[in-house]
Length: 396
View 1 (cartoon, one colour):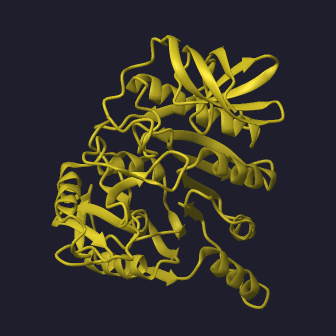
View 2 (tube, one colour; view 1 turned 90 degrees about the vertical axis):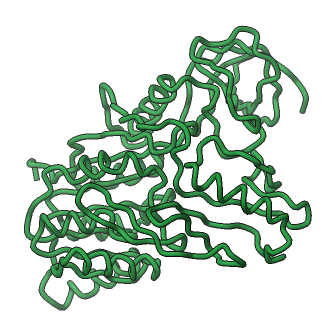
């Protein structure tokens, strides 16, 4: 499809695309800025929806800047480099508000998004794709599984950029032929890669965040924006005190450790066995003995607890914190949280749409949203971290 249209971008939608209207149809435009007047090419049509890409900027938005990265538009890693940083934050606040309004029917007069201390060279964790046949190393191209060969990445922390250069200088001679991707993460002690090969090893790292020290490696998830972590923790743990707390999708214990200092008993649940091994060690090194770490899928653990409650004394938690992957929490997990009847829930999310879907279910069961705060963990992309505090409604 090669038809083109002249459109004006009205605003940025969830997913990072620009919204426009033409000929009675809704047009979704990639890599746009609110206020752009542009000629766009129609790439795909679905009923009254048109999916388009920009051919020519007729009149640029005041929010548009020249993307500094030479791979922008081809590499699928970043989709907000065309926006000023202020415009990125504004768009992310509107994305959160839009999702919560449309999906969860939560009305928010405004949402604040805490900016990243460093909008560039912030990413301390990445997944690099490899194509041994083409001898390319980088990220998937936008909308495809072709590997965009990246020499320099504008969002990587310098030690990861140096590692990328070292890998490229290896010229694929010592890279296993069947290796399709590499997970890399930075911390005190250097860089960890998984899987290991040649001189590139899955080394153990550590990082101090406020008063806590966390050990981890590339086989376990750790947040990408380390400079923003103290602010994220402060918000997620605000006013968190009580007898018992439950930390779901706990990873290496980012939230578990500070929760263990605030509650008499804490349970953490995580499916990744490497992460739970680190979580137990992190607790031990912090001399915190009031916490149990369970290696299991969160959905399976919640189901098992539900079965046990039918025959034994009901297990309860005052406080539940969950930090699920981008797909959000499974229906069984939301159902299990409701059955536990905590007085407070903290939901940490990296996807506003799945967050809103899950909040809708929790609100239907009597929980109220107390606060919503965004964190720009992923500058130069449309992704945003959100922390939501909920409490059981006083009306119940």
